Length: 135
Length: 126
Image (tube, rainbow over all chains, first blue to last red; front, side):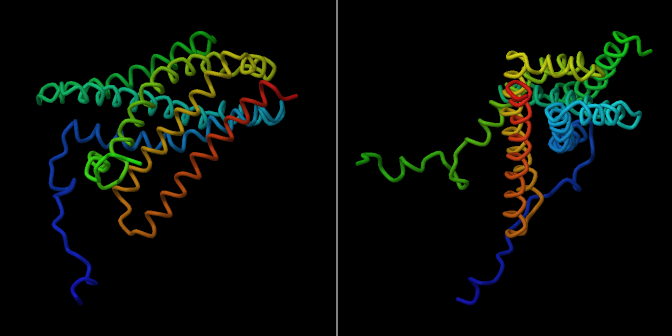
């Protein structure tokens, strides 16, 4: 019975390091990273809402932080993470239907995800700044 | 009294004892997030840089408050499930895993409830 207490050494499947990194690998990893970033990014939304609920002074303080160049950079990154995770999610919806598993389709979807997320981020901030005459 | 056989009761639930609940909720909230994020992003982009009175007036409108509440609800469920997957993938020590899963639940609940309270206060508060 002594064997029962010993840690069981089960066989493990090969992990990330045995595979060559391809565009789909990279996008899969980025999907998870952006997901984790958005997880903590909700604190930004919470801070903004709470500040607005607290009063003008607190709201102006948070607004000033978001308006600072570093704050803006964080918000641009946040926007990109949202778009990237969103497009990555759409990719999963396609796969959920059993379609899009051919290699060329997988590669195409991966490239569309990264190109799409960058384009949408630039477009969003471009239109936003342009409408305010921020250029 | 149940007429189902023991096998019938457990069939399809798997080792996590919750069947496809995790997967299904993840996809369900992914769909709602997709719609809600797009709408709320337009709302927030319009409000970026706006003064306090404008922001307060806009967020107090029922349609905007309801949209924000829906997004927060859908968002925290989705992010809790996602972080749970990450923890289960990378934290192998049982004790630390349970701790991390608890923290994940607490964080999601605190952020969610904080946002909900703030939105409600903007609508009903003084």
